[in-house]
Image (cartoon, rainbow over all chains, first blue to last red):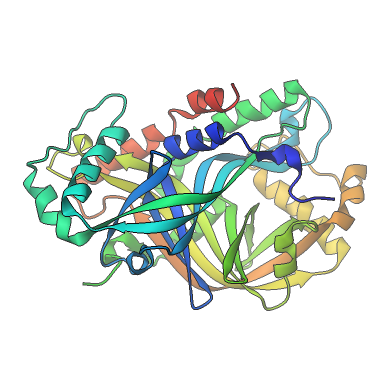
Length: 197
Length: 197
């Protein structure tokens, strides 16, 4: 028996890129002294590479250097699937979409490239409404450039983990999909009230 | 300058436990041959420990043994914060809630404990509506017990990363919070349509 089951792997690169573009917050993992060093940063997919910017005081910045290998996780929607949503008899499970990548880092030293990249990233993230434009003459932007390090990651390994009840009957796959949408729209306000009380 | 800034760390253990209980899907990271081995599994917080179950064919199962150390990430809501949501002038940022833990694993060999634990986990996850009950005499449950391994994790390190614009004016913190709620309710249906087209 092979693990994971084939129906839970997605080798359609277009789907994986769609996850990265819709959920850009990446979990970046380096290994230091046999321990994972973990940082969460948005990365933008451009020309088959990932572009990011990091606070120079973040310990992870030391690992975002030329030829270092990093592991990345992009996280799509996820939720518990109650057997009650199916028309057939099933056991409880958890559905989720995750993309695991490995890649090699290249540090970009040019402050002009950093500035242009921050402007482009903002333009990408402000889609489709563009309520805000990061202007090249923004004084706050210029003041911050010395404290931000730019890097790009060339992806060497792609793995899509799409656990979405694809092995069930079409009706049940659809029910699981509706549950995923519903579940991600609930609970967040209630949760934030608890955490900020 | 210390990193991360203190206002982005939450040392209130109650808040961290609230994240774990609301967002039980954990990212489990072990280190093998200097590479991270990554698995996504729901873990239930009980008596100050985390309880989980894993497919015996998952390579991660070999690392969920006595005294092995694992790193865990629990992920709360996250979103891009456009400066346009603030009343003051700011740069673009990303808000998120993550809980990072380290812990030591103990394998639980008893099949009776596994069975009871699967029943309790289902009861926890079916809250508050309890649309489904996993019955002890469910034949599918019994057939699966030999292929599932139970483990518990004793937490040794807690770190809460609550990046929620807490350093801004109250009005702007509130605006960022509304954005987080709104953003997590959008885009998911559109995204799933793309991925399944």
